Image (cartoon, rainbow, N blue to C red; front, side, top):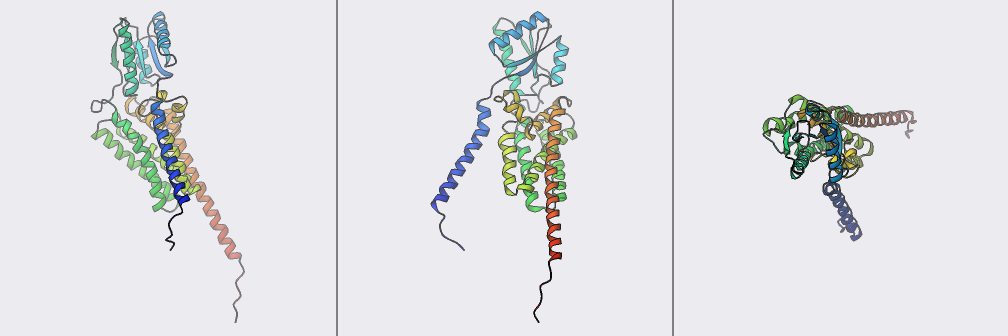
Length: 335
């Protein structure tokens, strides 16, 4: 057994690697938060054409590029756009006095931003009331539970991939284990959020299905990477899901509040898709579900495909080795 001290260059290299890792972690999580701002946030302005044009121009003048405005005819149309998740909120001018409509269940941070718009209207000698069309649950008015659930959904999938790799052999068994865990884990996490913390509303099984899809998408993808790349696959999966997916999910604010392209990109990764789908199912009767659902299913299929390809490759290699062993001539035995 070699008991010699580790060479100093190797110690220095290890310290340098750790410094790079912690710097990457800080950048991944701090950059989106520090550079967060409102840009191209979809909202509606309801009312007569002259009034909506005036407010739209004022918004663009005071906050250039902040809002992507859609004009609608009246209050009912504005509320429908909010409930369908076409917009985050609206400025309603159709009844005379302006009213700001929000949906804190879609994003409490965006709702606060729209409340600031109402305050700005009030400063212009125009009294503006605020009405929350789709509010957060009464037991969790700040929406903290849904925001906090984003990280456990990622870690849960990563942990499943690691344990299944260490404790289970066989491609079919690993995939089955990942799916079974995702279902049970989704049921358990949703029960905590919905029945204990009161952070979710809507149908319990539908919400559990979203949780299960999130866990399965992460677990199967990392299992697939590991099956093809070995230990390096865990690192690749962690980078995609943790360093990219979680900070760029927009779960704590909104994708439109993240810097530049990062929010839109994050919606094509499992954490961002899961956060959007959970809000749609729990608070908006499923409206806005197609894109995040397709993203999660695509990642699940991709991970399962990688696992199956690795299994086929292993089976082919074993068959070749078995055939080569049978064709090898017997070793003569000296008499």
